[in-house]
Image (cartoon, rainbow, N blue to C red):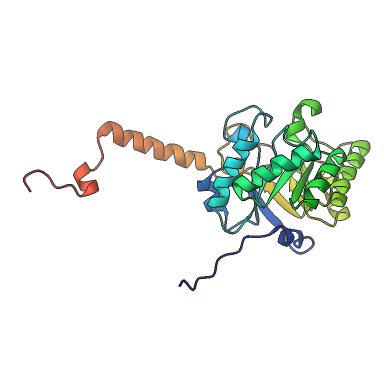
Length: 276
């Protein structure tokens, strides 16, 4: 019998307990290779609907389906053992009613093994958050700049830049906290607003282009690795250019193919030549 103890995954209550104690480090992942690399370092991995843009080259996040999100989340869960895995609920899968949200969320979690869901929306969706939480589904709310609202917001624009709009976003965040959300993602909001919401809420705030005062931060992994092409937000710091490394490796491979610089098959597989 193995004496090795199984590594326990970070739980939603443990993320909540980080409030006021330490910052939460989070990134996105949509595939097994990235998930394996991120797992031990991060507190949380978000299987974001941004995979529609990053993984499929689509112009926005609106067309990805619950089935696709569940498949990506399952790959991430299978490839990790430490980070808490949260999966985005895609556009149209929860806005109709709390009942619709529960059916889709329950199906996605059952199919993937993820630890909770994230949904975008203001106070109008607080009842949906409450409905899910009361039925055992942890919810990470998302307010401020909401990519699923790109058409009504007129594009990917910073939010909370006026006193009136800032008050509305604060009320959105408070409504989700009162409804039982375990945390709130603050995207693309004025720094002062991000700081104010963080100081107001008793649950963690996760910033993305918000404020360093947030209780944690999240970015799209491809953005910080130089894999997103020219579509990189101004707030995303690029830590390295993995794309350049990949291009160099592919160029070397292509050169080997074209010059025949490969070992013989019998050398690779131990096949003996005829007559030996």
